[in-house]
Length: 99
Image 1 (cartoon, rainbow, N blue to C red):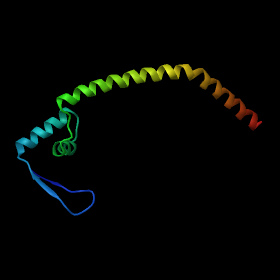
Image 2 (cartoon, rainbow, N blue to C red; image 1 turned 90 degrees about the vertical axis):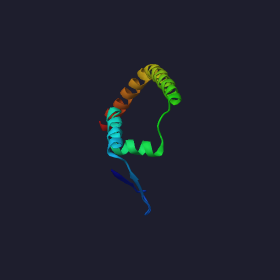
Image 3 (cartoon, rainbow, N blue to C red; image 1 turned 180 degrees about the vertical axis):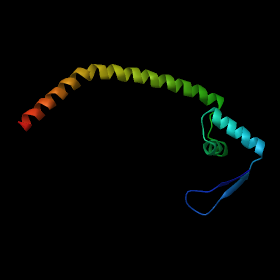
Image 4 (cartoon, rainbow, N blue to C red; image 1 turned 30 degrees about the vertical axis):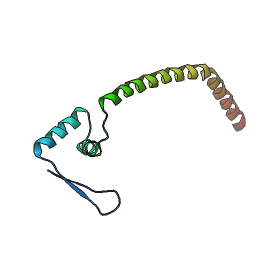
């Protein structure tokens, strides 16, 4: 299979020739991780994939995100009564302005 890569601007192009078996493996890998074929090829060509060491950092970041979400829910919970009363005051002011 021939793959032609063109930049967004300009006239240059690069042609890659991939045998059918390798292309089937690329399709299989893309479907396994729910990527389109063009996205999978872009990752392979550019080399923007995670190594084993970086996957550990991703797990650490997921844990940090969950911790921050929990903290956000606590903060939102403490401000919820104030938001509710402010909403009530705004509705009262709106009703008084229209009367």
